[in-house]
Length: 287
Ligand SMILES: [Zn+2]
Image (cartoon, rainbow, N blue to C red; front, top):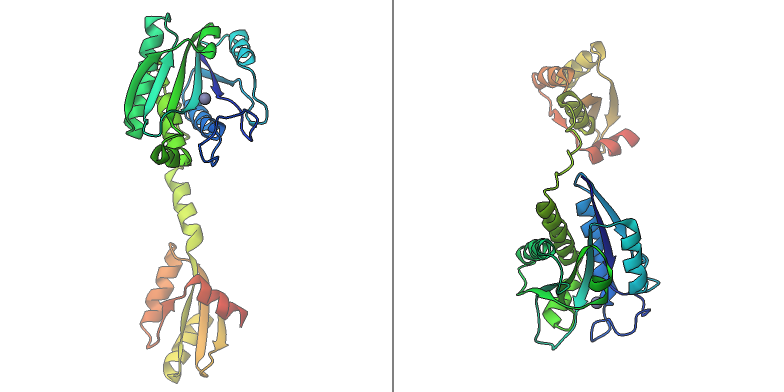
């Protein structure tokens, strides 16, 4: 069975809903509510057998009336409606509280309490408990519903948290986890990990590097040059700023056997063979 979850971010932003902002005007309540909703929906989408519908205006430009929000959820046939809000009160008040309609079902209370507890555990904020209220959105949505007050905008410490995406993520995702637990939702199977062979190729790709050797010792350089000349490795002869001879050898896939062979052979000669960094190689290539 698929469960249908409708959700709304309380109010609207950009001053569209009068009041409903931090005391110092630094955040609209909607910004917090919207952040929670986005994380909530993203998290819930990771589960099977759940459909979602957002019934407010996701742009925050229009304060969709509560009657319209409830009507959308009802018409869609939601099984559960979740409303996200930020609280206001005395500056000393803080914490999270969740509301259900007074005469709602025991199951609704149970689901709401599970969600509430998940949010308390995730945020570590003061637990103000599960409460009842005759809020319009709770009264007019026909299905089970709850309203989360995820923190007090009027409390300086909590407001600072509520402005962060990290806190909004905690509230939204914890609420989704509470729904998953309540309804026994199964997490979708994650995309298959990349097959080992492909993984090795992916890892090998960025390790293509050039080797460098050079110096002044004529005999040694002669041996290096002879080896390179006869071998199958690409190379380029450069002259260093100090007049030394430099062999830019490669490019190599450093995970491949031919790289190891070449390195082993060149190490036998009296030369300062070493792997170049990408930056060094680029510098030398362009000379
Ligand atoms: Zn509100």
